[in-house]
Amino acid sequence: MTGDGRLETGNSRQRGWPADVDVAIVAHNNLAVLPATLRALADAGCPPDRVTVVDTASTDGTGDWLTHEWPRVRVRRLDRNEGPGPGRNIGITESTRRLALIMDSDVRVTADTVPRLREAMAANPAIRIASPIVVRGDRPDVIQYAGGAIHFICEAVNPWADRSLADRGPEARDIGAAPCCALLMDRDTAKEIGLFDERYFLGKDDGDFTHRMKIAGHLMWEVPQALVLHDTGRRSDWLFYHQIRNRWHFILKNYQLRTIVALAPALAVHEVAQFAFLVAKGHGLTYVKAIGGLAAMLPALPRDRAMVRRIRRRRDRDLLVGGAIVMRADLTRGGVLRRAKTLYESALDAYWRLVRSVL
Image (cartoon, rainbow, N blue to C red):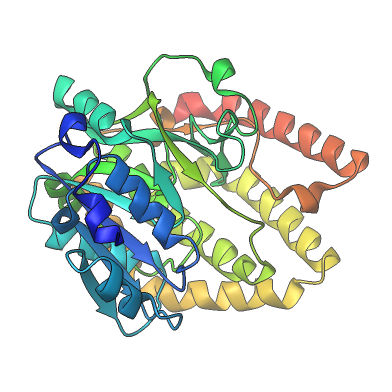
């Protein structure tokens, strides 16, 4: 039986796929994992005509495979791969129902993930994004992402990584940031805050979108009974360019001016430490190129900041946090580096406690 047939059979009607939810999956050369993603949606009762796969210039036969195996799934082909942002925006703007589940192609929903997310949004109109907990595909009892936030130094905070679901507990919570592995969102609100910033390519792209949702005063609700399974590997070194450039783009675009001024000493120390670290790892030239890439984005900064001012309902002091910073494990391998990271984070926390009251 084809994949399209599986979407229409099984327990789909009993499970009750929400009537006002469309799905958009962004894929680039992901044919090895996309079948499992679509099968999981099938098992959750998703009708095939609710699904759009945005194929971002894949060269692995994704489009032909979809046409043959899932003929009722809509395929939207892009001629260039410019990261997931353009595909996510197509999923938001071209969906026909009020809510859109925006997914990566290597994520598998469980049978009741989407109904649970939808129930949370129905219970509280202030919730404009409902987020599942992301667990490891090979160990579904272990968390990959949960309870996310934006560190004031503009790095990711992921306090539950590699801990068990039992440790996280059953309480739903308003969170500060979430990866766009699978997010259920109100489409009109997503458009009001400016959609995904397509200039990021990768790195801080989902953090920027979810942070603007928080700036606008909306709730982003993490539902621990809703899970998605995610298979991921180590990110490549070529992403350093985007991470360096995009971090400063995020700060200059989204932070209030008083926040940037108050944080200037910490930001300067962090930048020197980051540059020295990258030089030691052989990526000094990448840092220089990233700063050049940032400079090319500066002419749009007044427009960017005006947009954020327009939607702002909450101050930076209420959204940014301290805490442990997410870094690739291979970059902090060894006891000395781990201890240095812990001491550095403690110093940053002390600085945040000092300046937060004036923001």
